[in-house]
Length: 421
Image 1 (spheres, rainbow, N blue to C red):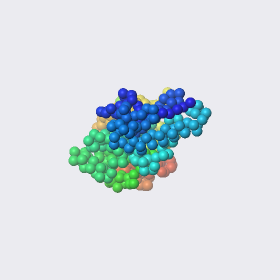
Image 2: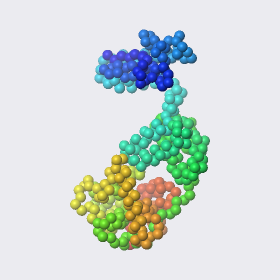
Image 3: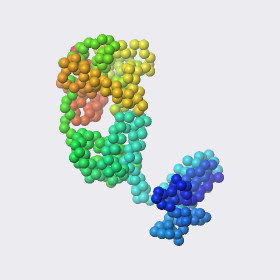
Image 4: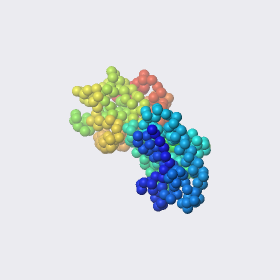
């Protein structure tokens, strides 16, 4: 039969550092033993083993409200015993961890709302941020996880190396963080990036009921303004120049040129999405894939140019085979490999730009920006392309793009590609 007992946890590993005090715990036994640590402590001399309570007359307990603490200890022990009695024979079907959880929940019913709120609001930036980071790693979003981690590190460094309870982050704290980083020469874009990451962590804690605040500081704090990003788009002639480049089949630059035109034909596909493509993403005359950044499903009609380029990469491959050598499966373990390939791709794009007589800096992102900007220049409605990647918010552009049906997007893509032929 399960049983509980109030004890002083006198294990050496449990001793409170720098003192002779030990925590008071509830020992739960049900085939196995678990200890539920309580928020009280005393010395060996201050604990009454037989009566399971604090000794009032011992100096170690002077200053403690022994009567109040003993009442709480008795209440918790009684609650646990009542639960065991209530479960009766059914308890034999339960494991120890389930029983412990039920006991803890029975205790929580006694806690008033104010104390529950106080306990909930003890969660810190590193604690909840760690939860968020682990989730991103498990869902194969290591880039976002790394962003959260670097942002948390910046906040903790500003706070003199100490973790920050989320409840302590207010508008004043955010403003002082901004001023401190700005005085150290950090650009507004970098400061804004840190803020957006911590805002995501903070809002998640509220959403998941880990934090309760009268007002959200991020609703009142204004992110530092950043100067408009210098346009990185290529014009129609530059795209035509890249299309007309000729390299030996199978060479590194030949593949680089192919990847560039594939991304352009796919409405400015991100390089990370290109590296994830498999044979099964191709169905009839369309290419289907999920955008890594948002998870949104996208569908692109396979144009004549795209069809011709893909013939080399699909030859002899099976349904689950990757189309391209990077073979990025989206896992955290493969992320560093992907980043290495992305760096190499950007270096090779500079060679392409030089060979094509292009003076602008050419990167994988440029291809995406170029498709959107060319679409705007040839008169495609702003409701469809909405300033391309020249918007201050990339998210806004993506929302506009994904809100239209395939036919509209296919027609827009044909117009862009037709303008560059």
